[in-house]
Length: 211
Image 1 (tube, rainbow, N blue to C red):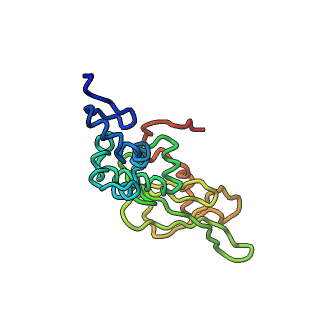
Image 2: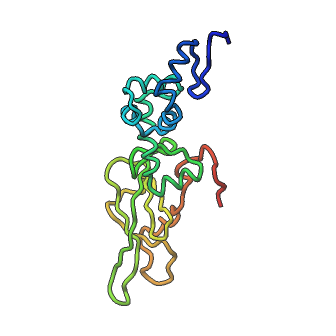
Image 3: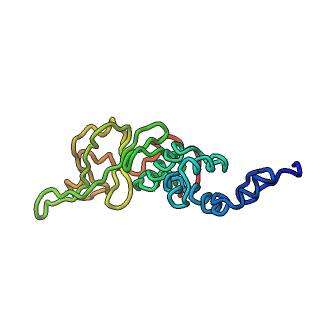
């Protein structure tokens, strides 16, 4: 490095001798660590950083690019993705733990291995009266497009069905084997699809060993 050039360890930038002295007196240099810390949080906009530091938004944008951060539009896209991941429902969180690559679209929908998946909630449903009263799990077909739907059962497990088996508007089934007459509905074969993660395809990576 030529003797006439100086390197700022804090800002990781190179200046000539006169420019270096001017730089060390600037707000950008004195608050460089704070600026970097805020830029690492993608959900803080350049305008918000500029307001807190006392700079213009354009000056923050230039400093962000010099520091190697993405432009504002890219940071906003990353922020939206991070928020969606934080708001993901249990099925997609569990899918990630099992090694599937989840691309969230909203709170209850996401792409997994190119398949549009949604989560819904199942609830208990009572049929009959007195001694003929039986308990089933009730599920509804989700509105809108989907390839696979996962209903969270009351015991915390997931009933995972492909669209071809979800042609009903509403139906009931018994997730447990029953020894009494009438405890199995016509849809009792849905038990085979409880925790049927293989319908999502093969996981791309394994982060946690399966038990």
